[in-house]
Image (cartoon, rainbow, N blue to C red; front, side, top):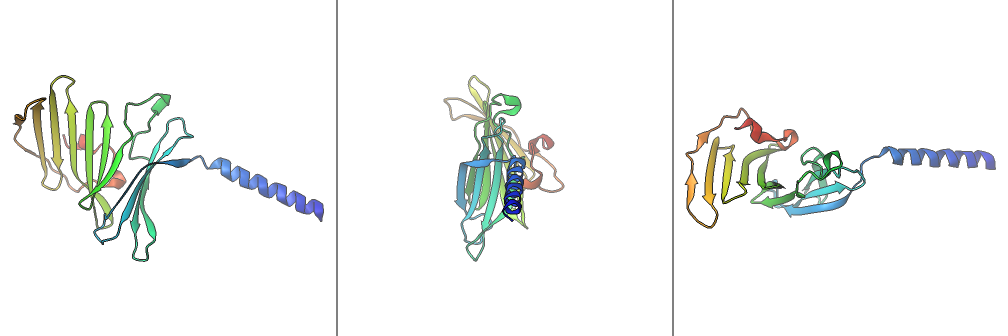
Length: 196
């Protein structure tokens, strides 16, 4: 009986150890956390950005939790594909750790890659996070910044160039862009490539 119990315990511990080894995700480092009302129900929802520091590439996971009326958080969205890893191919990729913001009921993802700053604004509607605006600010490395704004709801692209140290801006006439449907966070990956 003792031998049977001992064998059972050994196999059980081996099975548990093997299952732990198969779990290759270690998103344990909380990088950013933001609270705010995303679905306009008056309850404080939560957006969490975590990093897997065990993985050499250090990927990031975005999770969005909506607070229910029973005060429990429900996972509404989770993805490891939204942001580039910090060390793709084992080398620093140039991306700053992104920020997540909640402003006026909208989710804003802020990314900075070298001299390019990007803001992606999403609204929660019909159970999806719809991309409604993209703002990209580029510094030319000398004395000019260019802000390009895609208003996906209006279907307009506006570009403003500004010399550093002056308030004088050169604004290009808005151009029309056409979309069949607003991109969503679920299929979000470099959406501005489809708009240019």
